[in-house]
Image 1 (cartoon, helix red, strand yellow):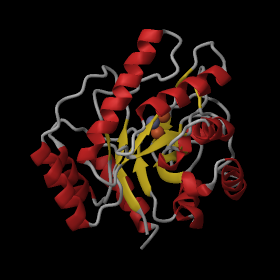
Image 2 (cartoon, rainbow, N blue to C red):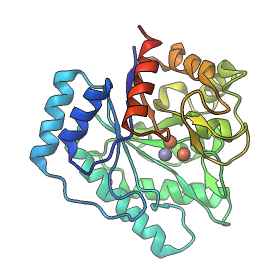
Image 3 (cartoon, protein in one colour):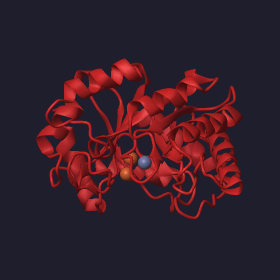
Image 4 (cartoon, protein in one colour):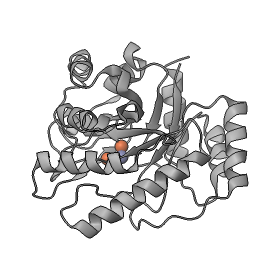
Amino acid sequence: MIYLGCHLSVAKGYEAMGKTICSFGGNTFAFFTRNPRGGKSKEIDPADAAALAALAAAEGFGPLVAHGSYTMNLCAADPVTRSNGADMLAKDLARMAYFPGSFYNFHPGSHVGQGIGAGIRRIAAALNGALTDAAPTVLLETMAGKGSEVGGAFEELREIIDRTDRRERLGVCFDTCHVWDAGYDIVGDLDGVLTRFDRVIGLDRLRAVHLNDSKNDRGSRKDRHEKLGLGRIGMDALRRIALHPALQGLPFILETPNDDAGYRREIAEVSGWFA
Ligand code: ZN
Ligand code: FE
Ligand code: FE
């Protein structure tokens, strides 16, 4: 079985996203916890969040996958940017109390010239400052390794986890476009990549998947998502990923460049693989 959905806009509220994903044929979704580029967050209406939780329970949704802001860089060189990031993270994690059982996924950060090691240490320090006993499960996203992004290699994510005190709260979100762009051959050797993931991080940490095709070749480090089947990963490989025994029962989120009709089509296509 699969929990499947796409990234949705929070503009009309939380229950509205639940209704939208039902109408698309999905049973999970992703949403930004705040403006993805501007960093501002709107107050959450508790009644709206409760209505979503009721709908999700009634419809048997899988875990929702909230996404942190792109502007949040926990390992920025500039201390002001870094403390803004830490502040965003703490507030986002507190807001997740409105969405029990959901995951909070974010891009670890870009070290902008400080080096991978310094980036990893800063990210872990920020997590140590923000993770409380009340925190949700927090997912580090596998990254394409674009620019100075941290998280393009599984080892980097592992080191962040190792340096975090409350590591029982940490998991990983496996973004197929990013992993491919980072150089992992999920087309020719999916089993090998997942074995590697298991050895380095542990498959028990793999808690969600971003199912995307890529506009670019393996190892390009570009991070340009493509519609399913129209990119360099291709539909056969995406199908093998969705059906892989090691990934069953996880929420799969489409972050493909689609309008509503396109997402409906992709959800129908992927659901069909499980029929
Ligand atoms: Zn992401
Ligand atoms: Fe992603
Ligand atoms: Fe991406």
